[in-house]
Image (cartoon, rainbow, N blue to C red; front, side, top):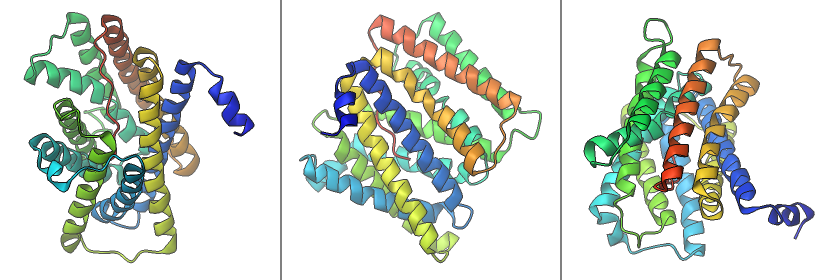
Amino acid sequence: MSALSLRFSTLSDNVRAALLMSGAMASFAVNDMLVKLATASIEPAQVMALRSGLTAILLLLVARWRGALRPPRAVLAPTVLLRTGADIGTTLAYISALQHLPLANASAIFQALPLTITLAAALFLGERVGWRRWLAILVGFIGVLVILRPTSDGFNIYAVWVLISVGFAAMRDLVTRRMPATLPSLFVASVTSIAVSAVGFGLLPVVGWEPMTGWLWLILSVASVAVGLGYVMIVASMRTGDMGFVAPFRYTVLLFAFVFGIAFLGERPDAAELLGSAIVVGSGAYMIHRESRRGILQAPKAQVH
């Protein structure tokens, strides 16, 4: 065991979980940055096909190592099919938006997901939502509007695509709650990656195939590893620390998105984007705090998009 590993093992469970969660968010931000770089040369469908295909291979290897594979007929469970379809919609909409939006903008708008899940659970699943959480939802969506700026150039069709991806992601996560407990998360994530890759390949005759350079293969290979690594770390985080303490660290993805956008993409977030992001994060963190105090916090499922 290295000195770093030994030191990590001596930390408290919550501190280790927070570091793992932050590492997962950094990995997802790296993936988003690399995907955005790739879409400058190839269409989102081609990115979906290749990146998700590489991710599927990685996840299948890990699933086999962990004994998490299941018979193919398990894929036909209605909840698995619905969740897979929702994840396809999430990926297609988000990558299409990421091709045209600044990385930080897309990431900030996507942080409306916890608010959207709570709203959808109240409307469609009959879950009880108190006035404080309704207020947090309202404030959070005001934050999204601050980022979008509907009366200015900040709002465009690509911002709508991020909102569509949020809707699909909320459906995905709500369906995940209804999935059989006997299906391992690794198996479900592997199925999702295979399906997303297949849809990407299916769209290629429509959008066309662009020649792949060595640089593009490197970008997508690293992106697939980043997604797989993020998935492993987020699962480890959920199993290590208290949810009420760890969950707010999901919002560190915004910090990484801002840093990567500035450092590697030449982006410069303005005051409205920073203010809106702070409002969205603050309202979401408050909801997490409230649910933690009530003891009803549900572990967020790992996202592969």
